[in-house]
Length: 412
Image (cartoon, rainbow, N blue to C red; front, top):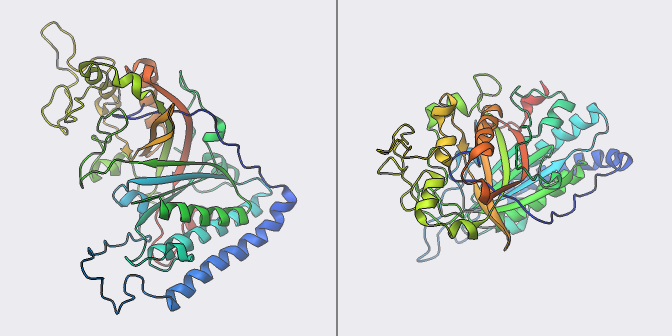
């Protein structure tokens, strides 16, 4: 598993939604434009004529009600799925765009990105196109992320960074093609499952109307934590401790100045974790495998969670304090020229024997992931307890400033 605590797989995957035929696709392209306009019209109508949610009683909150939290803005230089704090629930969806022609496919993609922009921005602004997203506490609080897969970008000759490539196969991979890949990736996160569920339904309807087919869907969750507290994964370890600050992220996560400056590349891995077998290990062995203490998250060479691991510290007998096969050592930036990923992973629990980690990490190009995962696949002490069952890569679009649509730069 790449980067501190993370990784895992699944058993019986759901069937892949059949791709529509070419004839049906051409008919749906026109329908997609109508639906996109319809979503936009609904959003616009609600924005001008709908109620101000949370202020139906003359703008007064009910007596004793806690103050409503501020909504997460959709528009901005970066997408809200990367700028907002991690919400405790998430839904990831991937779609395929069956080929018709380059011109038709580019039009369908442009229309779908416009429809998703209207759906997500209208909902975030308090004017959702569906009554299920209206509430008394103000606009739904959610974060969204949209990305493009490498195959679609290459096929349509879109303006994406050169680092958008699929990682190679790694020893021990058990990847199910039906659970990974995809031409378009959408992530929706919120405080509970309601908002992502409804938004996923609406986004899927728009995608199908544009001729795209749902490839896979996956839900994830995090434990409740206080602000600025690192969440734990299902092994019980803190997951995300060594994330980069903004200065380091500008070097390793965000694209260089230019059209990709506020974009990044997402690597997704669905990793099944044998939590029962790992929990049966003595705590000392768990700590040694991870290279950190399960209690406070501190490296074995440190006193606090955010202390820098000392990879060269040794015991009197010459053995490394952080073992040679420890996960923290193999993912350490010092072994990779200082390169860091931004990790925003989630746990999943789809069955008693299918629980684990949704590794979701962001970086400038996938070569960063490949270098780390190659070391992990070779000798990570956690490998006996992990199985990678799905993989996906996506170019995460820059945000859409007010008055613009996601992905406008792709077609220039």
